[in-house]
Length: 97
Image (cartoon, rainbow, N blue to C red; front, side):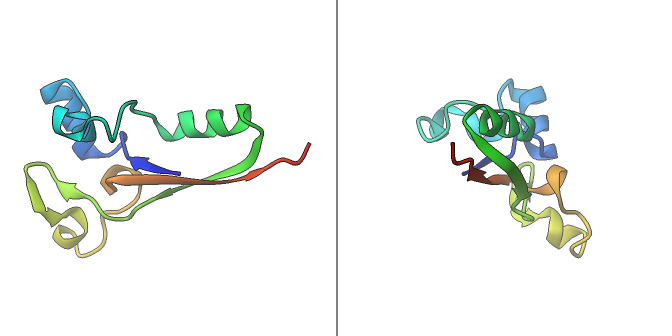
């Protein structure tokens, strides 16, 4: 499962300035309806019978208002992980009951 990363600096800045996460503006609807955090994904997986959810961040994120420049380009690859990735994904295994 993949979705926009709501915990990136870009998304958090958008929430603070515009009142919504960057991937949840009017032009992104209906592709993205509900903003979820990595912790929400872990909880959903556990409640749905999945075990060992692994959270992965895309490793690529663009700067606010400068979508042609990524954090990774600007920092020569040093900025990465949760705060500098625009995407998040989860891989989980179904528990056989």
